[in-house]
Image (cartoon, rainbow, N blue to C red; front, top):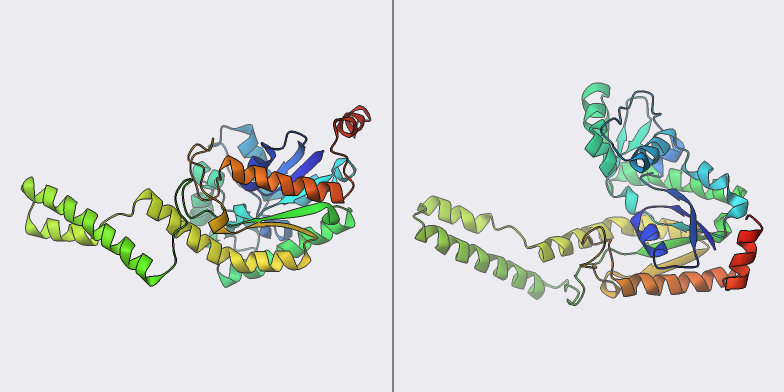
Amino acid sequence: MNIAIFGSCVSRDTCEYFPEATVKAYVARHSMASLRAPHGSDDIDLDGLSSPFQVRMVTGDLEGNGADRLIEIAKRIDLVLLDLVDERRGYWLFPDGTVMTNSIEVELSGAGASARRNAGARLVEFGSEEHFSTWKEGFSTLVKKLEDAGLWERTVLLDIEWAGAMAGAPHPEDTLSAALGRRWRRLQRGGREATRRLSRGAGAGEVLRQFSDVRPTETEEFAARAAQANSDYSRYLDFARETARHVISRKSHEVRIGPDHRWGPQPFHYRDEDYLSIVDEIRVRAEHLGVDLTEEGIEKKESSGQ
């Protein structure tokens, strides 16, 4: 089965667990806003990026050609996977109204800082009213382009919430007692550290500051990030689901962070069993659309050059 992706790690990592699938096009680091008003690459310096993949993805965003890349091979595509994870960092808005996605690569290359310093660009934060309004316009553009190419009815929206807990751990409770418990544990950690500092001769002022500067654990940080992201994403996904023909959803309490994920633990990097369950649903959608997933069907498609 030939798959195209408009999204990022949620879709791409899922395909790693899908042996029948071949990814024919991968559009990543590309916000919906860039489909409407791409900045262009002429004045953006990407020399700080060493990976050809990174350069290609950022350049595609700057040219706003993500949807066109899928449309070019529309007849060869059985299914499109769509996720919204690349929206999480917002986008740079230039004075002329053009945009550049604030991807990790844009930050690493210094292009974002340069855009702000030299071109007067400002960062439009994910979740803001301005971002959501622009995103809706860009999403509608994507839907229209894919509809015209006959791809939208073969597009599956992966609505997978960020995981709030590591594999093997319970999902964090969103109750007052649970919040008080987390606060109490942080104070206990602060108390233990304060005791150690006193024993090393620290002053009273330094020790008192320790109680107001207790850093969260990695587990607490992941849980907080997931809760905030899932809240911010909710209206985006509500809007996307209104037009999507096929949606695969997972709530935060249904998934977990994979501690051994190849790209490291993150709330959007899941366990093996989570990806496998998503793949099972993708197979059902593909079969509903008439995609032949048998070995004979795959071999026939490959031999025909499709």
